[in-house]
Length: 491
Ligand code: NAD
Image 1: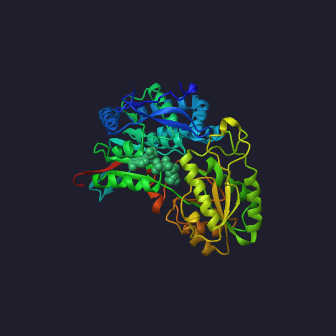
Image 2: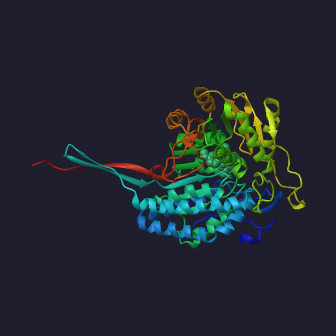
């Protein structure tokens, strides 16, 4: 159905496995970043739509929470197969909506959505819980029980990848959910809704309400019938989520922004450090929360690193996201392009823009309205400036020389964020020492974005609260209950 997108095509909300228009009957324009043209219309939903979706999820919870794990697992595996069947179409839709290259969506976003469902579908079959014998007089064991209706709010940068990272563990654990995708990138969520129905997931288990954060997101996080909220997005929005959820004592997981350091010591494998740092700077147009946006390079190799890095950055091909020769597609929106460009203005005052930051020349006519930006490298010897402290979330990276380990650890840790970090060295002792000292939820050594879905994932400081991934997700989406059984007198 989404194959023939046009500006009049309206997606709908999914409530009780029915596709329904928003109660307001009004729609927002969904703009395609590659061209700046309207590609579809998105429901401008409000609290009434959230109420209906929560009611559907509450009704479904009665049966779904009692459905045996094996049966839930089979349904999720079926859904994963359908996503895989439609991977090509989903990759093209994701690219159309977000501006990322089809190549990247095909290699990363969609396979990861498949993996999310397969992972949690099988994780629930292998999970176990604790039991404790107490003085041989009592047996304590722990039940991990589903909680009810989960409110799931996701951002635009990895639309299907992050939406399914929430839906899969929530429903695998026996909860029902109301999901709110980003209003900027709703299309793959709509296609997922169709696949949910096709997979035979019972009505009400997955509900999707589209619309604006301050309307739909606000209503969802404030809803008394939604005791658990998983949110991924910006730090300021995370604070708004907390303001709603706090007084209602909801269980909350917040995956927020980052300003991740990438520390390259002089003994690192130079070529690999440069090549991977290119990816960690500019993959997905730099719009990944885990991108290493601050590169610190030890002084003996700084000039060489800078020269190689700038040359490779200049060689990146920016343009048509549907062309497999393209490295960097379009930014997600004109507002985001303006924000990122604004930071380049600041960078010119605070440091030196070594390359990029302009609009690519020679864009074909049909892409003239798109949101393109040449990837930029900024040299900054100060670490307290705005460009090195604030999340830019675009194809802009800073390069800074450092002289010793203590100094670079202090600089790396010197922001309000603490999501991830990379470090490059062949010195094993230093790798362990620096990894332990970095203030981050994830530290990669001699690599970047190598993900294992079993590991705890999340941030510290302004990068978030709580952990998801593997068992952490299963624990987050369930409530632990202790059952204590007296065993009777010993003979
Ligand atoms: P955002 O905070 O603007 O929006 C995220 C989601 O929240 C959207 O669905 C939006 O509609 C909704 N929202 C907006 N206002 C709301 C409100 N008042 N109440 C409830 N929901 C509301 O973020 P974004 O611009 O879509 O995404 C970019 C941000 O996400 C960056 O800061 C990035 O670092 C972060 N991010 C973090 C992770 C992570 O895992 N830590 C992953 C991806 C993105």
